[in-house]
Length: 200
Image (cartoon, rainbow, N blue to C red; front, side, top):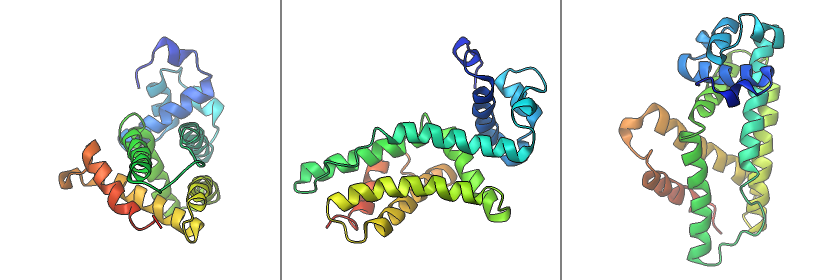
């Protein structure tokens, strides 16, 4: 993450959290140290530790920042006004989820990698599991609202499966790029196949 004038004008805590996301994306959680974050953010040594005293506090700060950024993006996704009455309506829904995946694999790729690292780490250590569960729940609720409107049976469960499917597509694109499907056309095909099971 290049340090620009815009970056420097952000609050120090936010700069540290953003830099920590980049460190995790590049080096995994093993590479996450306060000093590494200082260097990535272009901050004086000791700056990150003054914002996040412990490693757990730093990880919690990363999660809070991930949720903040992802929720700002998710606000653009309509949860009302959906219809599956026509092929055009269905294509619009496919486009929305394709855009979402393309965003998470493109501009938000570092956030996607960092989020996956945090979830995997939570399987071994429970310190952040409650916060991760709450963050996931927000997105399930949003997806369920849209599904409920178009008459999907068991919208909460369908939303959970939808998000699991989206995460699966992301994981495959990131971890198994040799299988293809990470380009927009491939993402759209994946979304179309996945959504066939939800459209009543």
